Structure formats: structure tokens, C-alpha cells
Length: 153
Image 1 (spheres, rainbow, N blue to C red):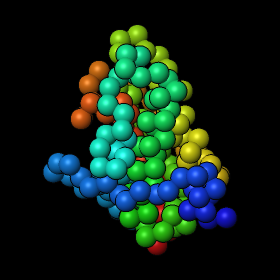
Image 2 (tube, rainbow, N blue to C red; image 1 turned 120 degrees about the vertical axis):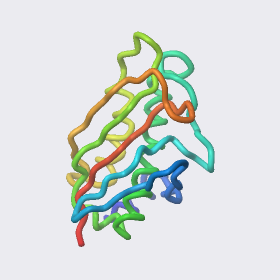
Image 3 (cartoon, rainbow, N blue to C red; image 1 turned 90 degrees about the vertical axis):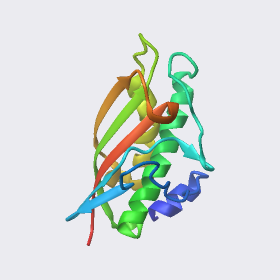
Image 4 (cartoon, rainbow, N blue to C red; image 1 turned 180 degrees about the vertical axis):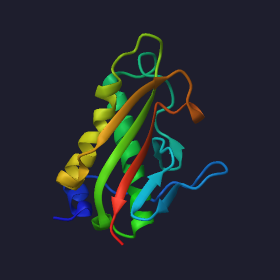
């Protein structure tokens, strides 16, 4: 089963790759590595989750925000590689959680992305991960992800 078929089985549709909102590229490829810029929880042209974990959002809602960011990462990887089947492996996921003081559920929030990547790619989705809580986020987004992936020629 392909990655896009797995998305369909999960009831998910790959969105168009979000455009950059400032002076940067949504992704850069060098050799067989693709580095995505920070992917926010864009859905239908707007930030779907604007606010802080531990204040406006629960861990469960943060999990959904991370999942939406992951869908946008997948769209960027498809744009970079031409086909999700060319993604050999996710190497590293960096997750930034916009949170209120005292919030400690960063890993649980970012599992929304990690579990989606694993479901879509299987073993190719296994990755190293960084989970960081921050006090401010661009566009007030609840979560932001960056991914490094190895892709085929």
C-alpha cells in the first residue's frame, strides 16, 4: 500500500502544500535530503489551532494540531520529491509547542505528528524527534513542525 493509499484508509486527504508567508522557501532540497520550513496547522487557508496549550487548548487538541502540521509536512515532501513513495525515510522531526507556563505535555502533543508519520510511512516513518515548548509562535499557531527527510533521486 502506498503512503497516499494509507492516508485514504485513515480518512485523510493530502492538502495543497502551504505557500511561504514570508521571505523563505517552504522546503529546500540538497542532495538526497529535504528540509521543510516550519509547518503550521494550516487548514483551508487559515490557522486551524491558534492559541496556547495549557491555556486555550488541551493536550488532545494539541495532538490534532500536530496532526494537521504533519499533513502539511507531507504535502511539502510530495512537492519536493514529486511522490511520497520517493521518501526513503523521515530522519528528524522538530516540534515546537506554543504553551502556557507550566505545560509539560509536549511529547504527547507531538505524538499527533509522529503517529501519523508512522501510520503513513510504516518503518520509513520512524524518526528522531525534538520536542520544545515556546512562549510565542508565528501567527499564534499552537504547534509548528520541521522535518528532515531522505528522498530518492
